[in-house]
Each structure stands twice: as structure tokens, then as C-alpha cells.
Amino acid sequence: MMNGRQRILAMLDGRPVDCLPLMPITMMFAADRIGVPYGKYATDYRVLVEGQIRTAEQFDFDYVSCISDPTREAADCGAAIHFYDDQPPAVDEINALLADKTTLAGLKVPDPLGGGRMHDRVRAAELFKSRAGDELLIEGWIEGPCAEAADLRGINRLMTDFFDDPAFVRDLFDFVLEMNLGFAKAQVEAGVDIMGIGDAAASLVGPRIYEEFVRPYEQKMVDAVHEMGAGVRMHICGNIGRILPGVGSLGCEIVDVDYMVPLEQARREMGSQQVLAGNIDPVAALRDGTPESINRAIAECHRQSGDRYIVAAGCEVPRDTPEENVVALRDYARSNGA
Image (cartoon, rainbow, N blue to C red):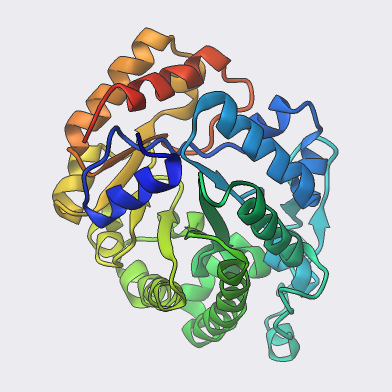
């Protein structure tokens, strides 16, 4: 019988697996399993690691993840961040760090080992390696070019910048690329096996903007992470139906597909070898479903995707999901081979 790390790596390598890998994204759900407010989970790597490992043990997940919120890089750049006791940290959109574009010229790339929020994530990777590195796949996390640019500039400003000031967008993406590849390198050196790249804002642009601006920088990120010796899990929340071919061309080991896009479409447009993860509706199907309905929904995802498939929800498992519903994900994964 394979352990979780072996199972995922075998799937990614195209080797036989004993059953389907299980990689649901859990953040607030994991914090609740150990009874801590989410503010502590997101700001103390020791709490995050404990929550992830306990959740993986309880539900037989095949991996653990450093993911917590999208503001770590922006925080270390000096952006205004709202911190909450029991919710994820959030960027202050109105007072975005680069609301004045000229600020970019003087912005320094933060040191991912400089004691800030990025360093806290690197410490999580180190602790995962020592506690679970032989048994569970370790996932790091960085923000993608579009998502991080939106955090620094403000999402609405960035969307108009694509048209009004494309040169600035490229300068901003260059900054993001340098910063997040340094962040990725620190996490890989700390022990992560696969790097999650979260680029949610990319789902808001059309194919032309994606191909002209976003995909080239995602490609640079993916290629660089591969050169570091780690795999890539691309996670773009939202409807990516219009950009599926581009995402599929990046060469990521795993692509998460949110519930808005049928997996049969993703399979058709990304090719037969792309490993897909997902993609039942996290709320309507997973949180509000029953073990029986969840089994049927995941079986349909598996059917549409085919054998190159990892069991997960379309996005994060909601914190108030009944435990028996997460067990249903586990039961399907463990009782079905690729």
C-alpha cells in the first residue's frame, strides 16, 4: 500500500497508483479541527502545521499545504493588510500599496527569510519536512503574476492598467516574478515537493489579455519552479473556461479546475495527460450535500476527467462542512483506482 506522498508522485509520473490521490484544499476547516481561531492559524506556522497534519491524519489526506491566505508577499512589501481574529487576512484594496504607480520604481523585493510573513511560510515548510516529509506530499504556495499584481495595485486599477498602461503592467509583473521566485526557492529548499501557484485574478481576464500579459509570466514561474526541482499545482479560482488551452499549455503537474468548468471540457482542451483536480461545488455539493450525493458527484468528475485525476473540491473546503461529507471524499478516493 502506498503512502500519500508515494501515491501523488506516482500519479504525476504516470505510474500505477493503488487508489486515487486525495488533495482537498483546507484552511479554515483545518483550523477548526484543532479549535484555534483562523487568525492564529494564518500567522503562526506551528499552528498551521499542526492543523494540516491533524486534518490529514483524520481524513487520510495524501498531502499537507502551506496555504493560508494570499497576502504574505504583499505584507512583506509593506502593503496595508487587515488582520482578523477568525477570518483570513485581507489586502486593503482602497489603500493599495501601488495606488500611485510611481511607487513601484522604489519598491524593494523583500527577503523571504527576513522574518516576515513569507518567512513564516518557509518555516512551515521546514516543520512539515521534519514531521511528515516521508509520508505526505508537502505543498508550498506563492501568488501568481495576476493575483499578486492585483494585491499590490488593487484589482480594479490593474484591470484598467492592461488597457491604459501596458508597460506598467509588465514592469509590475517583472517585480512579482522576481519576488515570488525567490519565495518559491526558499520554500523548495525548505522541503516542499510541489508549489501551489494561486492566480485567481487571471479568471477575470479574457483570452487576449491572458495570452498577451498573464500566461507568459505564469510560464516563467512554472519553468523556474521546475528548474528548482519541484512540481506545480496551478490554482485559478473562478471560471477559466475561456483560457483553458493556455493554462493547459503551461506544463503544470496539476491543474485545479473550479466547479464552473466541466471537467470534460478541461480534459478536452488540456489534453489527455494533464492531471486534473476537482471539482465539485464546495458549497452546494460538498458542504450542503450528503455522503451519497457527494459520492455521485465525485464519481461524475472522475468519469469526465478519466484516470489522470485527483479527488478534491473546486476550491477550499468550507469551514462548516460536515465531517462525514469530507469522509465521503476520502471513501471515494480510497475505493477507486486510476
